Structures are given as structure tokens and as C-alpha cells.
Image (tube, rainbow, N blue to C red; front, side, top):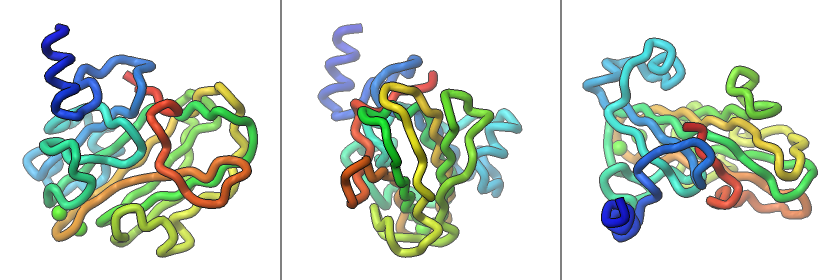
Length: 190
Ligand SMILES: [Ca+2]
Ligand SMILES: [Ca+2]
């Protein structure tokens, strides 16, 4: 086990062995062999279509499943989702943003319950990596979050061809710029 963990660390990836309440977010991805034209991660989950792979992402910026240092343009024709919990450091109003290529939606729950998650931000066409302010729909309304509480979050995206990327960000109370959510404020769901 120790050797495997060391190897995972050397590859620069978060722990490949998903478990609840670990730092980071779960990520599932489906290539064309699995999604067969269904562009919705939510639909694939509902239909229990097994993903091509699953891993743990360190932050709210998705990286390649083959080259963990690569934050954009690693594949075509795939669906992915990142999900888990946000745990804020501070109580106050937060604003969320999402950026993606080709399209993506960000869901946030009022607590740790996935079933209460509602769409809060989306982009229906491509943006550049971490380009959070291309369209107004990418930005959420202010959301009040409480320090130390767990909130279920899920970002789903579809990529056809050309460039691809997915990231979401928050503006923490007292700040103005969107920031990628760091590992310390993320916990895996499974
Ligand atoms: Ca691509
Ligand atoms: Ca694309």
C-alpha cells in the first residue's frame, strides 16, 4: 500500500483510491464507448452506465485522466462530472462560477444532500480554460454558506471536439476575484 501511495504521489495525482471525506473531489468520465451519444452525466448516472474511469481531483479544476498535470485539451467526445462536498472556512455570501468547453452546469445543495442540489451556474457553449466571465450565466447568485458545514457540489460537462476544459470557482466573502477551490475546502463523497 505504501509503495502504491508513493507511486501515486510521484505521478502528481491525488489518491486514486476513492473513499468518503478525503481531500478533493470525485471525478467520473465516460468516453464515446460508454456514453453512446448521451451528453448528460446525470442521465448516465441515472441509467447506471459505468464510467470509463473514476479518480480523485485535487481542486475544482479538472485535469487529464492520463496526464494529471494537463488542465485542458486532453480528449474528445467525452462526458465527465466532478462531485463531492465544499466545506467553507468562513460564514458568509459566496458567488460561484463555472467555465468549460464544450458545455457544463454547476449544481450546489443547501446541505450535504445530493438530492437538494440545484443548478446555480452554467455555460451552454465553450469558454477558454478558467474563463469565468465570458457569459452572465456562468455566475451564480450569492449563496450563504456556513463555516465548517458540508455542501454537496457537482459539476457536469460534455466535450465534443476541439479544446476541452472544466473548472469551477468561488469568490469567498471579502474578496472579489473567482478562485479555484483549494483541496482544503473539498471532500470526496465516496
Ligand atoms: Ca477535445
Ligand atoms: Ca470542445
